[in-house]
Structure formats: structure tokens, C-alpha cells
Image (tube, helix red, strand yellow):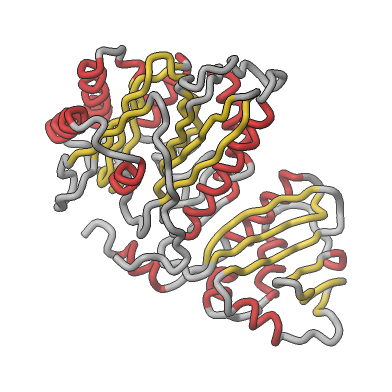
Length: 407
């Protein structure tokens, strides 16, 4: 598999106290790589999550949604190569059996075990392989690190993706580390494909949920590769409490703002890594929308531009076709006035006042589009609403990857 030209090096990551990782090979596909990950979490670990809003979610998504209400976690199980989505009773029973097996091995309640699966839709998770895989991963606990886990949860990913941040809570330094997978079927209506965040901070589940939701709104929910929302999108955050500082119970707690800012930064980094690994991507595109009626409208318009095949193919070909941006703004369904609209590619204003700018020179725009990082800015001239979204270009590589996906 060719590594994305937009790839970033895997960062140096330190272990998180209260987290042990094991990986194993269940053999969900015809490969010998690890495809099951088990994460053992310290007793009392707080958990929060954001899950797909797809109306056809996987059993693992439904399982997580129900168990998040408890606010505590002891383990995470992740399967790669089989999404277990749209698999009926068989899929639900397989997810329940695998998590129950993990619970028995760890001596905890099944409701404290969270799960996620990614891969082909419509193929039931083979129960015998799932049980054998998580059993083997349990035997290997402590032998894998975050890099091994990141590789094990991947499918069409071309490079392992992770990030780390830190925050000071009083005199205590806490670490936040996240791993993520995702390359295609990315238009999250909550999060991204599969992302898992671990911290040694002491955080009440309710505040962890609030901070994660806020971080998600400005990161995972602002990326798109192809406009398709997965049945399995899951982002979970786990706080082991091993740092030992006073609990962050809410926004008024000392250090809460610092923790939330670090979490937001982490999610921002992880979300952009997914776009950089977009299937067939050669360009990383940042779209900034200002002057909309409100922030919601700005985000809708930004995603309309980012999801337009015509915009994305123009960027792939280095074509400064700003008319396609106008089209995407107009079809978004949000308030827009042609004669107030202005568009920039890089630092060059290309259109304003309902037409191309006088004396427009395409040469600097073409030079900007020749690079790997492309910036498009749109101002509606209507209000204070603003948003920023990230996407990638659309090339024949996307077609090749997805046409051959099941084989």
C-alpha cells in the first residue's frame, strides 16, 4: 500500500498510567497482521464518547451508546477488517459475546467493556474468531504500545495516526494521547471512523463528556473525505485518574479550561490526520467561511464546498475554477447574496461583488494550487458566523481503492 503523500510521522508517545494494551490476530481477513486490540483500563476509569448518527449503526455503536450511561470503563476491544454492521441478531450476539469474554478475563462487569469494529459492512463478526482473538490479546496485555495498537485498528489507512498533548492541573502535569483510524467513508456527523483518547487526568464522566462534545464540534465534525458517514463512527475518551490531582468535576474546576483546551488541540490534530490519509488524496484543503448568518450556517456552507466532487477534482487538477465554489455556496441552502460574496484561493482574492475581481491574475493561484496545502476562503458578507472545515482532493486513487475494497 502506497503511503499518502500527505502523511505525518508517528509521534513519540509515552505510556499512560492505568492503560495496558495487547494485540492479536483473529484472522478476520486473509492476512497475518494483528486485527484485535484489547485495552485494559484501571478500575474507576471515566469514559465519554461521541457516536455516529447513522440510522444504520453497528451493534458495537449501540453497545457503546448504552454503556456510556454508566460513565465508567475497564476495557476497550477493537476489531479491524469487519465492521459487523448490518448483521442482525448474529452481529449483536457476537459483539455481546466478545465483550463478555473480555470482562470475564479481566474480572469486571460486561457493562464496563466498550467495543468498536471497522471494515466491510454486511459480514457478521465470526464469533469464534472474535473470542479467540480477544483471548489472545488478553494474554499479550502489556506487550503492545500505542503504535502497535494504531496499526492494529487500521484498514485502508496508509500510515498510523496518533497525537499527544498535555495540560497543567494545578502543579500536576497530565498527558492526553489519542490514536485514530480513518481514510474513507469520512463525513462524520459526530466524530470520525474510530478514535480513542487516553489520559491520566482525574475527570468526572459528565465533564469528560462535555469537554469531548465541545472538542468534537470543532474537529471531527468539521472533516470530510467523501461525504459518506460510516455506520461505525466512534470516538471514546478514557480518563484513568492515575495523575491523582483534584477531580475536574465541571467547567468551574481549577484546571478545567486547560484540560479542555488540550483535549480540543488533540482532537484537532487527530481529525486533520484522517483527512491527510484520505483515500487517494494528494492535497490537504482548508476551507474557511466567514460572514455567514451564524456559525451553523457557515459550517453547512463549508461542508457543501468540501463535499463537492467538482471542487475537489478541480483542486486535484490544479484548476483555479472558483465558479465551482460559487456553485457549492449557492446549493448549500443557507443565506447567501451573490453580490456580497467574495472568494480567495491562498492569499489571492479571485471573485467579489458578484464577478471576477478586476485585473485578476491566475498565476499566483495556480502556484498555490500546485502545493500540497490548499486554502480556500469564502466571505458571505452577511453576519458574524464563521467555520473552518478540512477536506482533501478527489483523484482516481479513490475510485481504485473503493472499487477493489472487498477483494
